[in-house]
Structure formats: structure tokens, C-alpha cells
Image (cartoon, rainbow, N blue to C red):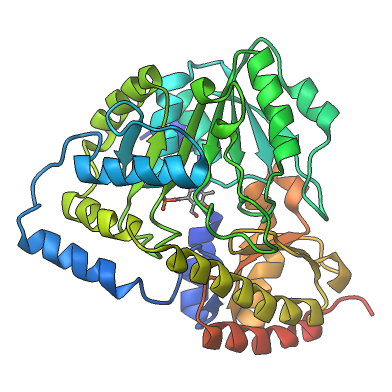
Length: 389
Ligand SMILES: Cc1ncc(COP(=O)(O)O)c(C=O)c1O
């Protein structure tokens, strides 16, 4: 039996493979991007109530009106993007579906899509399914910025879109207004779209501002802003995301979304309204808690001998294993799971070609304090895996 080319080109997610191995060895899983702490009680209650109140059938395909209204209000206020709930908002099953539906709506096979790398691993399959030809532009450590000339060279009349993820997974880079201005200039010069994945918009350390590229001059008409509830409200299992797009593009996204999933879970959409109405203090605490987790966990990594690239946002940290004398990320992570009892993601998952990430390993720190301390204590054992003095 021969599977279709499109899926045979997907490499099985290394994250899943490491998760299985971690479970087998009782390792603390700092690989997969989901919290081990509870979601806010108020939204769990709101979800139960919505089920009891009878929100159990399909919602309007592109999102329950109350949720779209709450999203539009939030996006207008927080992101500085004028937003109409009826014309600009599409609710999907997570930011994951948002990006897929957006690419299906905008990209024809053979169109070029500029993607910064290291990249969130779903963008690879998104490109394969939509037929996009990825044009990779490196973000380089330690600050994970790009070379403006490299970005200029990546754009051409064949460019349909650029995928931009800020705050960035896996690097933690928060794109500055200046960086985004160059992206905006190139999008306008080449009549290309910005597909902005802003799922970590509230998780920023160091008091840096979150800048939405759609709020820059000339970008409203050529940006799809993608976000969702997974990370901000610690509900990765709820599968709620949304796209903010110009009306014509929204229509295309809604068509793709209709045939991909019909709609996101109706009762959870109603609970999403409660979440989006949380007061400002909720977001201040979220940010404060993540910065505290980062500042608690990174010293353990530094003490273990890895090179640590301090993230400005999101809840991941990229490290380099070369100082310990290792040069193969996957072999290293497997050994770390078996000998140290901590799991992470081999960096090559975030690069194309994979070889470029061979000495990188990504850890995530969306965990309870106890979990981070326990993992940190285990990581001291990395010294025993050291291959060089
Ligand atoms: C950059 C980025 N985008 C999207 C997602 C997925 O978001 P969702 O749960 O809303 O599908 C993730 C999850 O790890 C992510 O890191």
C-alpha cells in the first residue's frame, strides 16, 4: 500500500517519539509544549455551565457570535488592530487549524512562502499540504535576529506570504517594531501577506512590547493575525484559535475551515467568552509567573554546562550541547532521557535541512515549580554525560 506523497513527506513528529520514550523511562517531559498545572477555575466552571445550558450543537461555522465579539474587542484594544466580529474573525480548532486554513485560502501550489528558521514544526507540513515552496531565512543566536539583506533576498515577485511567529517558538525571540517594519516594507513591495502567529502574545519577559504586524501602517489589508486560547489560558486541549483577516481573506479562510473541521467546540467557545473577559491582572500574573519560571529554571541549565540562549518570550529555551562534547541532538536527547531522566526536543526538528539544528536542544518550562526544580536537580547529572573536559 502506498500512502499519498503529501503524508509520506511528513516526518513523524520527533516530539511525540521523545514523549513516548520519556514515558517509558519515567523522565520529566520538558519536550511537548503543554503545562502540567491547572487551567483557571472560572473557565472550567464556565465550560461546564455552557454544556448544562445547552450549547451542545454546532455553532456558526466561523465562530459563536459572543466569542467573536469578545475576540474583536480584545484584538482592537490589546493588539491595536481594528476588528469587526462579523467581517474579520474566524474561530478555528486551535491556532494550528488557523494556519492551515489560512494557507489553504491564500497559497497556490508553487507559491513561495518565506519562513524564519528555526521554525515551529507545524509550518513544514502546512507548506507541504498547501503546496507552498518554503524559502527559509535564518534567525541566528544569541539574539535570534535575522540579517536584513538575507530577508530582502528571500522576497521576490513569487512570494505569496511570510510566516512570522512572535513571541517565537522555539527561540523565544520577540520581534521588534524595527524588524517588523522591514517585513512590512517587503510585504508591501512584493504584494505579499504576513501570516502572524501570535499565540504567545501575553508571555513576554523583560518588559518588551508585543507588536502585532497588522497594526503597522499599510499592513491591515495584508495580514492574517493568528492567536488562540491554548497558551494564554492553559487550555491546550480545548482547541480554540482564531484568525483576524481582511473580509475577503476571511471568506476564504471560512470556506477552508468549514471543510476541515466545520467548527470549534461550541460549549468551549462560550467558556472562551468568560476567559477573554478576565481583568488585566490575569495577564499581568500570567506574564509574571512565566518570567519567574524562566528565571528559576535557566540557572539549572547553565550549571549543567549547556550554552543557554535566554528567551525574551514564550516558554521555551534553546540550548547548545556542543560544550558537553556532543554533536547529535537526537542521540543526546535519547541519552538524557535514559541516563538523566529529563526529556526535551532535538533542535533538528526546527530546521530545514535538519542538519542545521544538530547541536541544538529545546527545553520548555511551562511547568509547576516543583517539576522545574526536580528536572533541574536531575539535569546536574548531565555533567556525567560530558564527553570533553
Ligand atoms: C508557535 C505556535 N503556534 C501554534 C501552536 C498551537 O496552538 P493551538 O494549540 O492553538 O493549536 C503552538 C503550540 O505549541 C505554537 O508553539
